[in-house]
Length: 215
Image (tube, rainbow, N blue to C red; front, side, top):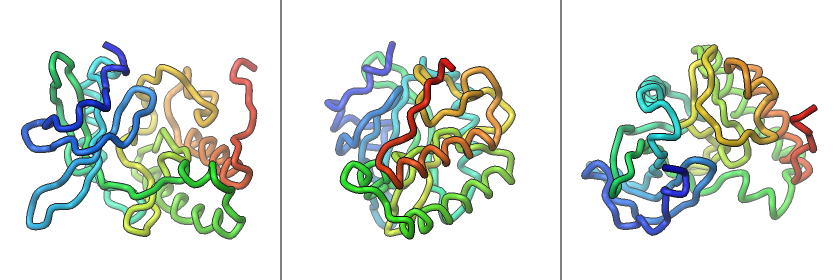
């Protein structure tokens, strides 16, 4: 099974008997995201990420999400639920998080951030990273698409967080946002600082710096 198994035409399917896939929000390397709803005293929007179970160690992935669910910070998106599911013959893992109205990757193609806007973005990002690093975690996937706006508040995505000092989740392709050591070494807070530096350059110029990983 490969990442192409996450399909936009799954809209209407129900995950784990309770989360209806209402709208395709987009896909990335190894995952797909849909709009869903959390039912309770008040129904509200949420996002559900689906990942092929074959793309990573399922037990490690679920254990990481369980640890992430214990975290609470005003600039970190809350992880509501996570588990296993299956669509047709495809075994999947899913994570349900807050729904973001917008992320930085949607803004930058239109215009760069001003220095003032960049500073306003930087403060909450550093605050969230400091919180994670102080509790033995790394974000692991910091980039414009994971800097989000939830009800007019900036938050970092919370479904990729990993324990510091361990090897990161399998990535089929590394990008400019991934620190050089990501390919061969354990994840440390320094990997987030690399990603933040790349993101800051892109925020101010609309383009990430050019870097040849082979060198």
